[in-house]
Length: 555
Image (cartoon, rainbow, N blue to C red; front, side):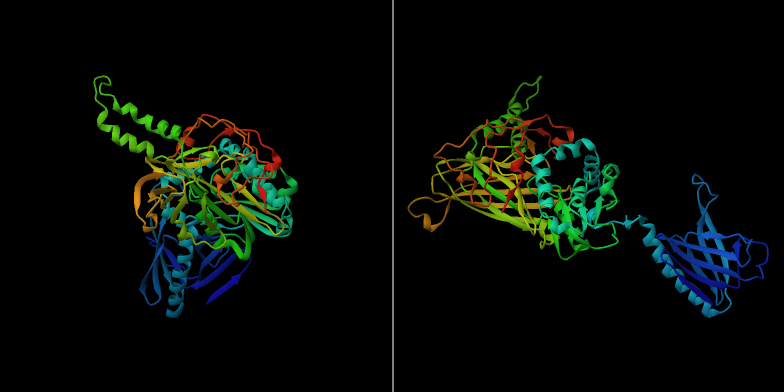
């Protein structure tokens, strides 16, 4: 007869056996009845056998690796791994003979064994947490990201000095703070999930704004630092729970009313954390819940920068040496030249270098599908504002915090206070020539790869100009391929500048890009020598002074 008892944290299924004995055993099976007990406690599944006497020894079986075989209508054998209790001792197989009172009870036990074993296998793939369970079986994240990239990524963000780099970006941090605090009505009494919490700063902001509870999900070792930082703020700590794990894998005890995150990388999409943000939305957010940020936009415009082009091209001159310690290097010059032009340039540039107004591509985080981020294809169309050589495409991004009270923008546009993202430029190895009013067309195609970044395919063309231009036709085309994960962090910076009275910042394009109310137009950052990780494509270091009144932009 099977007995079942259910509790809040554990569940038991018990079967009464006629007897059981260990193999090999020379003794006869005990005449007293025995008990087989399946149980679950805090996610751990157990199988135990013992005689129905108080002093009887309990035999434990690892059900996740055990196998059950029928020897007859009422007789079975359970084979499991065992050891002498020392992890250094190699495990061996152990057999337990089971005798049932009836054939029906034997069938019921075999059925229950398979069900509980399935649960055990699932449970052994995860770890029990105070507020949920981390499943470590191969997740969607693991299936699309190579292990070496993920290891470097989490190691990088697990270090305090890199978190400090981001915290000291006062435009970034201040805009997040303003977006949260100015929209208290969205947070008061609400459940918040901080996706990729890092140091936990955004979780603390949400708690300051009156959140009912915040779940700070962080996969790197930074989770331990976040726990310590939050504990150091006891008035807020009681409403924040740190959960170490990937958002693709953790389980939370309740749904979220709001997601908050800083998922933006270089060019918005680098590091592919936007996908994790979208997965968190699908897994945790209630219908019509809010996301901070809500949308992101990538802005693009052609630029002309002769100095930058020459600087990059000159890097390959080393390979034109015909007698380098007696070695002719020139056979590698072409490959080196193309290699340098495959690196996007990350720096802060003067917006007067832009050749035409910008266009933009919008990603709505509340509705975009994860798969739509695997490949982003943007058609390009510009009208040149003057005759010049076009050296490539300049890009930057902004994100909107669509609060119920205040809509606030965080922008990385050229001419706005510089952030640790700077701007990005893709340089054509073969520039194109344009005249004022001439149309520039092309394609900006980004394809995600398993190193948590994108391969960029850029094509820019100058269309026919003047009489007969309406007939179409391309005068000149240039294409390049770039790896967004391997940018060139440029140390030289443009000089401080101011707009003349007759000069308008039309190069930035539509009003949507615009400047904050008091743009620091004379702001000039000083970049520090990058760390090894920075050169490998992660967070940048910088120093600079900002006007706190310029943090973000209201709409």
